[in-house]
Length: 74
Image 1: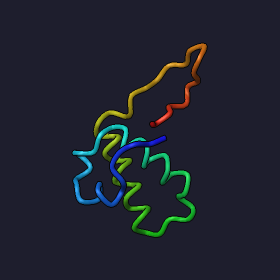
Image 2: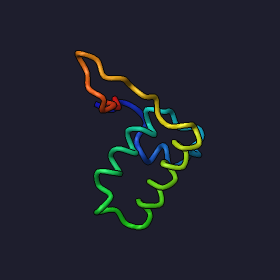
Image 3: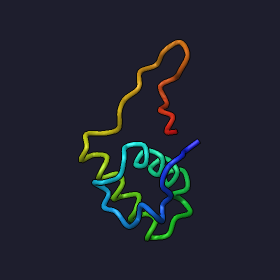
Image 4: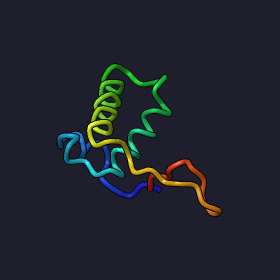
């Protein structure tokens, strides 16, 4: 479960000041709902993608016996 600032609080800050877990959570959430987003939502998702790329991607997690390769953004 995501515990952190909500999107209305984050919208007042530049993406460069977002934490990695915030970028990861909202990237995942907006990507899953992308077919239903309006142009503003698509623009937000694009900006999040650009910030993730600028940072060199999200932290990669390797698979272990107890966890898979899908990152869980909590």
